[in-house]
Length: 392
Image 1 (cartoon, one colour):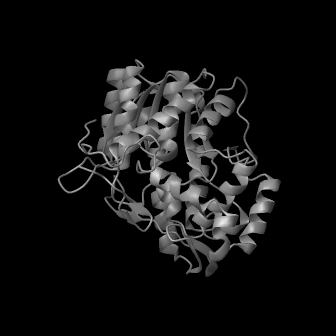
Image 2 (cartoon, rainbow, N blue to C red):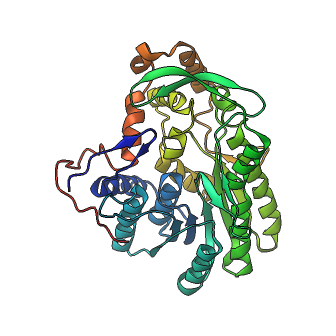
Image 3 (cartoon, rainbow, N blue to C red):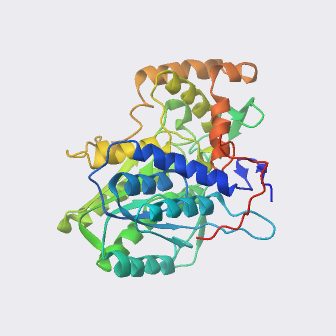
Protein backbone atom coordinates (compact mmCIF):
# COMPACT_ATOMS: atom_id res chain seq x y z
CA UNK A 1 0.00 0.00 0.00
CA UNK A 2 1.00 3.64 -0.47
CA UNK A 3 1.10 5.40 2.91
CA UNK A 4 0.59 9.14 3.30
CA UNK A 5 0.32 11.24 6.47
CA UNK A 6 -3.18 11.60 7.92
CA UNK A 7 -3.07 14.34 10.51
CA UNK A 8 -5.67 15.05 13.17
CA UNK A 9 -4.67 17.93 15.42
CA UNK A 10 -1.31 17.14 17.01
CA UNK A 11 -1.52 13.45 16.06
CA UNK A 12 -0.66 11.70 12.82
CA UNK A 13 -2.78 8.55 12.56
CA UNK A 14 -0.49 6.86 10.03
CA UNK A 15 3.20 5.98 10.11
CA UNK A 16 5.55 4.98 7.30
CA UNK A 17 7.73 1.92 8.00
CA UNK A 18 10.51 2.88 5.58
CA UNK A 19 10.43 6.50 6.74
CA UNK A 20 10.59 5.56 10.41
CA UNK A 21 13.50 3.24 9.62
CA UNK A 22 15.30 6.02 7.76
CA UNK A 23 14.81 8.36 10.71
CA UNK A 24 16.26 5.76 13.11
CA UNK A 25 19.17 5.04 10.78
CA UNK A 26 19.99 8.77 10.62
CA UNK A 27 20.23 8.85 14.41
CA UNK A 28 22.38 5.72 14.48
CA UNK A 29 24.74 7.15 11.87
CA UNK A 30 25.07 10.36 13.87
CA UNK A 31 26.11 8.44 16.99
CA UNK A 32 28.51 6.23 15.04
CA UNK A 33 30.16 9.37 13.62
CA UNK A 34 31.01 10.57 17.14
CA UNK A 35 33.77 9.31 19.48
CA UNK A 36 32.92 6.11 21.34
CA UNK A 37 31.80 6.38 24.97
CA UNK A 38 33.10 4.30 27.88
CA UNK A 39 29.61 3.97 29.21
CA UNK A 40 26.99 1.49 30.38
CA UNK A 41 26.95 -2.08 29.06
CA UNK A 42 23.52 -3.39 30.12
CA UNK A 43 20.77 -0.83 29.74
CA UNK A 44 17.03 -0.85 30.44
CA UNK A 45 15.02 1.90 28.74
CA UNK A 46 11.43 2.29 29.93
CA UNK A 47 9.65 4.24 27.20
CA UNK A 48 12.12 3.24 24.48
CA UNK A 49 10.25 3.65 21.20
CA UNK A 50 10.17 7.39 20.46
CA UNK A 51 11.73 10.72 21.38
CA UNK A 52 14.33 10.93 24.12
CA UNK A 53 13.81 7.30 25.15
CA UNK A 54 14.58 6.00 21.66
CA UNK A 55 17.55 8.37 21.38
CA UNK A 56 18.85 7.12 24.74
CA UNK A 57 18.68 3.54 23.53
CA UNK A 58 20.47 4.41 20.28
CA UNK A 59 23.16 6.39 22.12
CA UNK A 60 23.80 3.58 24.61
CA UNK A 61 23.95 0.89 21.94
CA UNK A 62 25.97 2.62 19.26
CA UNK A 63 28.28 4.79 21.35
CA UNK A 64 28.97 2.36 24.20
CA UNK A 65 28.18 -1.02 22.56
CA UNK A 66 25.57 -1.61 25.25
CA UNK A 67 23.07 -4.43 25.37
CA UNK A 68 19.64 -2.79 25.56
CA UNK A 69 16.24 -3.92 26.74
CA UNK A 70 13.38 -1.62 25.73
CA UNK A 71 9.90 -1.39 27.26
CA UNK A 72 7.03 0.47 25.58
CA UNK A 73 3.41 0.26 24.50
CA UNK A 74 3.00 0.33 20.72
CA UNK A 75 0.52 -1.18 18.27
CA UNK A 76 1.26 -3.40 15.25
CA UNK A 77 -0.45 -2.86 11.92
CA UNK A 78 -3.97 -4.13 11.24
CA UNK A 79 -6.19 -4.41 8.19
CA UNK A 80 -7.38 -0.86 8.72
CA UNK A 81 -4.26 0.99 9.80
CA UNK A 82 -0.48 1.10 9.91
CA UNK A 83 1.50 0.23 12.99
CA UNK A 84 2.41 3.09 15.30
CA UNK A 85 5.64 4.95 14.61
CA UNK A 86 7.23 3.54 17.76
CA UNK A 87 6.63 0.01 16.49
CA UNK A 88 8.45 0.75 13.24
CA UNK A 89 11.20 2.65 15.08
CA UNK A 90 11.87 -0.34 17.31
CA UNK A 91 11.93 -2.80 14.43
CA UNK A 92 14.50 -0.63 12.65
CA UNK A 93 16.63 -0.22 15.77
CA UNK A 94 16.64 -3.94 16.54
CA UNK A 95 17.61 -4.77 12.95
CA UNK A 96 20.66 -2.48 13.08
CA UNK A 97 21.59 -3.61 16.58
CA UNK A 98 21.57 -7.26 15.54
CA UNK A 99 23.65 -6.45 12.47
CA UNK A 100 26.18 -4.81 14.82
CA UNK A 101 26.25 -7.89 17.04
CA UNK A 102 24.47 -6.13 19.91
CA UNK A 103 21.85 -7.61 22.21
CA UNK A 104 18.52 -5.82 21.69
CA UNK A 105 15.22 -7.11 22.99
CA UNK A 106 11.90 -5.35 23.54
CA UNK A 107 8.83 -5.84 25.72
CA UNK A 108 5.56 -4.37 24.47
CA UNK A 109 2.84 -3.67 27.01
CA UNK A 110 1.61 -1.39 29.78
CA UNK A 111 4.80 -0.30 31.54
CA UNK A 112 2.73 0.91 34.50
CA UNK A 113 1.58 -2.65 35.22
CA UNK A 114 3.11 -5.15 37.63
CA UNK A 115 2.98 -7.81 34.90
CA UNK A 116 5.29 -5.90 32.54
CA UNK A 117 7.64 -5.08 35.41
CA UNK A 118 7.86 -8.78 36.24
CA UNK A 119 8.37 -9.78 32.59
CA UNK A 120 11.18 -7.24 32.39
CA UNK A 121 12.82 -8.58 35.54
CA UNK A 122 12.57 -12.14 34.26
CA UNK A 123 14.17 -11.12 30.96
CA UNK A 124 17.03 -9.31 32.71
CA UNK A 125 17.72 -12.32 34.93
CA UNK A 126 17.71 -14.69 31.97
CA UNK A 127 19.66 -12.62 29.46
CA UNK A 128 21.67 -9.91 31.23
CA UNK A 129 21.92 -10.81 34.90
CA UNK A 130 21.83 -7.18 35.99
CA UNK A 131 21.56 -3.71 34.44
CA UNK A 132 23.87 -0.76 35.09
CA UNK A 133 21.67 1.99 33.62
CA UNK A 134 17.90 2.44 33.82
CA UNK A 135 16.36 5.20 31.71
CA UNK A 136 12.78 6.16 32.61
CA UNK A 137 11.23 8.04 29.70
CA UNK A 138 7.52 7.27 29.75
CA UNK A 139 5.10 9.80 28.25
CA UNK A 140 1.43 8.91 28.60
CA UNK A 141 -1.77 10.89 29.15
CA UNK A 142 -3.19 8.16 31.42
CA UNK A 143 -2.00 5.68 34.00
CA UNK A 144 -3.73 2.78 35.68
CA UNK A 145 -2.39 2.25 39.20
CA UNK A 146 -1.12 -1.35 39.43
CA UNK A 147 -2.23 -1.80 43.05
CA UNK A 148 -5.58 0.01 43.25
CA UNK A 149 -6.69 -0.25 39.63
CA UNK A 150 -7.64 3.43 39.63
CA UNK A 151 -7.05 5.23 36.33
CA UNK A 152 -5.55 8.72 36.41
CA UNK A 153 -5.70 11.26 33.58
CA UNK A 154 -3.31 14.18 33.17
CA UNK A 155 -4.26 17.69 32.04
CA UNK A 156 -2.31 20.59 30.53
CA UNK A 157 -3.47 23.54 32.60
CA UNK A 158 -2.13 26.49 34.59
CA UNK A 159 -2.49 26.59 38.36
CA UNK A 160 -4.13 29.35 40.36
CA UNK A 161 -5.33 31.68 37.62
CA UNK A 162 -6.47 31.85 34.02
CA UNK A 163 -3.62 31.96 31.50
CA UNK A 164 -3.73 33.74 28.15
CA UNK A 165 -1.01 33.98 25.53
CA UNK A 166 -0.13 33.44 21.89
CA UNK A 167 -0.19 30.04 20.29
CA UNK A 168 0.06 28.67 16.75
CA UNK A 169 -1.67 26.08 14.66
CA UNK A 170 1.57 24.71 13.27
CA UNK A 171 -0.21 23.11 10.32
CA UNK A 172 -1.93 26.29 9.08
CA UNK A 173 0.51 28.84 10.49
CA UNK A 174 -2.26 30.83 12.15
CA UNK A 175 -1.16 32.65 15.30
CA UNK A 176 -4.01 33.14 17.75
CA UNK A 177 -4.60 33.71 21.45
CA UNK A 178 -5.30 30.78 23.71
CA UNK A 179 -7.05 31.02 27.07
CA UNK A 180 -6.64 28.22 29.60
CA UNK A 181 -8.65 27.96 32.79
CA UNK A 182 -6.80 26.89 35.94
CA UNK A 183 -6.73 23.28 37.05
CA UNK A 184 -8.67 22.02 40.03
CA UNK A 185 -6.88 20.37 42.93
CA UNK A 186 -8.10 17.00 41.68
CA UNK A 187 -6.70 17.65 38.19
CA UNK A 188 -3.34 18.66 39.66
CA UNK A 189 -3.14 15.47 41.70
CA UNK A 190 -4.23 13.31 38.76
CA UNK A 191 -1.47 14.83 36.60
CA UNK A 192 1.11 14.17 39.32
CA UNK A 193 -0.14 10.57 39.57
CA UNK A 194 0.41 10.10 35.82
CA UNK A 195 3.59 12.09 35.16
CA UNK A 196 5.27 12.31 38.55
CA UNK A 197 7.79 9.97 40.12
CA UNK A 198 5.63 7.22 41.65
CA UNK A 199 5.94 4.76 38.77
CA UNK A 200 9.68 5.45 38.37
CA UNK A 201 10.06 4.65 42.06
CA UNK A 202 7.97 1.47 41.68
CA UNK A 203 10.19 0.32 38.82
CA UNK A 204 13.40 0.93 40.76
CA UNK A 205 12.07 -0.78 43.89
CA UNK A 206 10.96 -3.82 41.87
CA UNK A 207 14.33 -4.04 40.12
CA UNK A 208 16.23 -3.60 43.40
CA UNK A 209 14.17 -6.19 45.26
CA UNK A 210 14.72 -8.66 42.40
CA UNK A 211 18.49 -8.19 42.63
CA UNK A 212 18.93 -7.03 39.03
CA UNK A 213 20.53 -3.63 39.72
CA UNK A 214 24.32 -3.64 39.39
CA UNK A 215 26.58 -1.90 41.88
CA UNK A 216 26.97 1.74 40.85
CA UNK A 217 23.60 1.71 39.07
CA UNK A 218 22.61 4.98 37.43
CA UNK A 219 18.98 5.78 36.71
CA UNK A 220 17.73 8.73 34.70
CA UNK A 221 14.41 10.45 34.16
CA UNK A 222 13.78 13.39 31.87
CA UNK A 223 12.26 16.78 32.56
CA UNK A 224 11.92 20.29 31.16
CA UNK A 225 11.93 23.76 32.68
CA UNK A 226 11.70 26.23 29.83
CA UNK A 227 11.51 30.02 29.58
CA UNK A 228 9.30 32.64 31.19
CA UNK A 229 6.88 32.67 28.25
CA UNK A 230 5.84 29.02 28.76
CA UNK A 231 6.20 29.03 32.53
CA UNK A 232 2.54 29.44 33.48
CA UNK A 233 1.36 26.57 31.29
CA UNK A 234 4.39 24.34 31.79
CA UNK A 235 6.73 24.66 34.78
CA UNK A 236 4.23 26.52 36.99
CA UNK A 237 1.32 24.45 35.63
CA UNK A 238 0.10 20.93 36.20
CA UNK A 239 2.97 19.37 34.24
CA UNK A 240 5.49 21.34 36.28
CA UNK A 241 3.93 20.08 39.50
CA UNK A 242 4.42 16.53 38.22
CA UNK A 243 8.02 17.32 37.28
CA UNK A 244 8.63 18.66 40.80
CA UNK A 245 7.48 15.28 42.09
CA UNK A 246 9.75 13.50 39.60
CA UNK A 247 12.74 15.52 40.76
CA UNK A 248 11.97 14.85 44.43
CA UNK A 249 11.82 11.15 43.57
CA UNK A 250 15.37 11.32 42.21
CA UNK A 251 16.68 12.47 45.59
CA UNK A 252 14.74 9.73 47.40
CA UNK A 253 15.99 7.03 45.03
CA UNK A 254 19.61 8.15 45.44
CA UNK A 255 19.29 7.83 49.20
CA UNK A 256 17.70 4.39 48.86
CA UNK A 257 20.39 3.12 46.47
CA UNK A 258 23.34 4.52 48.40
CA UNK A 259 24.19 1.11 49.86
CA UNK A 260 25.34 -0.12 46.45
CA UNK A 261 26.59 3.18 45.03
CA UNK A 262 23.48 3.98 43.01
CA UNK A 263 22.56 7.44 41.77
CA UNK A 264 19.31 8.81 40.36
CA UNK A 265 19.34 11.90 38.17
CA UNK A 266 16.82 14.05 36.39
CA UNK A 267 18.13 15.42 33.11
CA UNK A 268 16.51 18.70 32.11
CA UNK A 269 16.50 18.55 28.33
CA UNK A 270 16.08 21.08 25.55
CA UNK A 271 12.70 21.76 23.94
CA UNK A 272 12.25 19.51 20.91
CA UNK A 273 9.35 18.47 18.69
CA UNK A 274 7.56 15.44 20.12
CA UNK A 275 3.96 14.33 20.11
CA UNK A 276 3.77 15.43 23.74
CA UNK A 277 5.20 18.92 23.18
CA UNK A 278 2.99 19.43 20.12
CA UNK A 279 -0.06 19.01 22.35
CA UNK A 280 0.86 21.81 24.77
CA UNK A 281 -0.60 25.23 23.88
CA UNK A 282 2.02 27.99 23.38
CA UNK A 283 4.92 25.52 23.20
CA UNK A 284 4.94 24.89 19.40
CA UNK A 285 5.18 28.64 18.75
CA UNK A 286 8.00 28.98 21.26
CA UNK A 287 9.87 26.01 19.76
CA UNK A 288 9.51 27.45 16.25
CA UNK A 289 11.10 30.71 17.37
CA UNK A 290 13.74 28.89 19.41
CA UNK A 291 14.78 26.68 16.48
CA UNK A 292 15.27 29.75 14.30
CA UNK A 293 17.58 31.38 16.85
CA UNK A 294 19.54 28.27 17.82
CA UNK A 295 20.12 27.21 14.21
CA UNK A 296 21.46 30.67 13.38
CA UNK A 297 23.85 30.41 16.33
CA UNK A 298 24.89 26.85 15.49
CA UNK A 299 23.53 25.56 18.79
CA UNK A 300 20.56 23.49 17.64
CA UNK A 301 20.22 19.92 18.90
CA UNK A 302 17.58 17.27 18.39
CA UNK A 303 16.93 14.29 20.65
CA UNK A 304 19.89 12.24 19.45
CA UNK A 305 22.45 15.06 19.73
CA UNK A 306 21.20 15.77 23.26
CA UNK A 307 21.36 12.16 24.38
CA UNK A 308 24.82 11.56 22.89
CA UNK A 309 26.10 14.69 24.68
CA UNK A 310 24.43 13.54 27.90
CA UNK A 311 26.22 10.20 27.73
CA UNK A 312 29.58 11.39 26.37
CA UNK A 313 29.99 14.63 28.30
CA UNK A 314 27.84 14.54 31.41
CA UNK A 315 27.38 10.94 32.61
CA UNK A 316 30.35 9.01 31.26
CA UNK A 317 32.89 11.71 30.45
CA UNK A 318 35.46 10.58 32.99
CA UNK A 319 34.58 13.24 35.57
CA UNK A 320 32.01 13.78 38.29
CA UNK A 321 28.49 14.52 37.08
CA UNK A 322 27.89 18.26 37.10
CA UNK A 323 24.44 19.16 38.37
CA UNK A 324 22.63 22.34 39.40
CA UNK A 325 21.69 23.25 42.97
CA UNK A 326 18.64 20.95 42.75
CA UNK A 327 20.78 18.05 41.57
CA UNK A 328 19.54 18.20 37.97
CA UNK A 329 21.71 17.68 34.90
CA UNK A 330 21.11 20.74 32.72
CA UNK A 331 21.11 19.63 29.10
CA UNK A 332 19.04 22.73 28.34
CA UNK A 333 22.12 24.89 28.84
CA UNK A 334 22.29 26.00 25.20
CA UNK A 335 18.57 26.78 25.05
CA UNK A 336 18.62 28.84 28.23
CA UNK A 337 21.64 30.97 27.33
CA UNK A 338 20.87 34.66 27.80
CA UNK A 339 21.82 35.53 24.21
CA UNK A 340 19.34 32.90 22.94
CA UNK A 341 16.47 33.75 25.26
CA UNK A 342 16.80 37.51 24.78
CA UNK A 343 16.26 37.12 21.02
CA UNK A 344 13.42 34.63 21.44
CA UNK A 345 11.67 36.98 23.88
CA UNK A 346 12.01 39.86 21.42
CA UNK A 347 10.61 37.75 18.58
CA UNK A 348 7.74 36.59 20.77
CA UNK A 349 6.52 40.16 21.13
CA UNK A 350 6.51 40.66 17.36
CA UNK A 351 5.31 37.34 15.96
CA UNK A 352 1.89 37.10 14.34
CA UNK A 353 0.35 35.18 11.47
CA UNK A 354 1.64 37.58 8.81
CA UNK A 355 5.32 37.38 9.84
CA UNK A 356 5.46 33.84 11.26
CA UNK A 357 7.43 32.43 8.32
CA UNK A 358 9.98 35.25 8.52
CA UNK A 359 10.54 35.25 12.28
CA UNK A 360 10.34 31.55 13.08
CA UNK A 361 11.38 28.15 11.83
CA UNK A 362 7.80 26.93 11.48
CA UNK A 363 8.84 24.96 8.39
CA UNK A 364 11.44 23.15 10.45
CA UNK A 365 8.85 22.45 13.13
CA UNK A 366 6.49 20.91 10.58
CA UNK A 367 9.31 18.86 9.12
CA UNK A 368 10.32 17.51 12.54
CA UNK A 369 6.69 16.69 13.35
CA UNK A 370 6.28 14.67 10.16
CA UNK A 371 9.60 12.88 10.78
CA UNK A 372 8.20 11.57 14.05
CA UNK A 373 5.90 9.41 11.92
CA UNK A 374 8.36 8.60 9.14
CA UNK A 375 7.34 11.25 6.61
CA UNK A 376 9.43 13.83 4.79
CA UNK A 377 12.69 11.84 4.77
CA UNK A 378 14.78 12.73 1.72
CA UNK A 379 15.75 9.21 0.65
CA UNK A 380 12.31 7.61 0.98
CA UNK A 381 10.02 7.14 -2.03
CA UNK A 382 6.57 7.87 -0.69
CA UNK A 383 4.95 6.94 -3.99
CA UNK A 384 6.18 3.38 -3.65
CA UNK A 385 4.00 0.56 -2.36
CA UNK A 386 5.20 -0.65 1.04
CA UNK A 387 4.13 -3.46 3.31
CA UNK A 388 2.85 -2.01 6.61
CA UNK A 389 3.23 -5.37 8.34
CA UNK A 390 6.55 -5.30 10.15
CA UNK A 391 7.32 -7.78 12.90
CA UNK A 392 9.36 -7.22 16.05
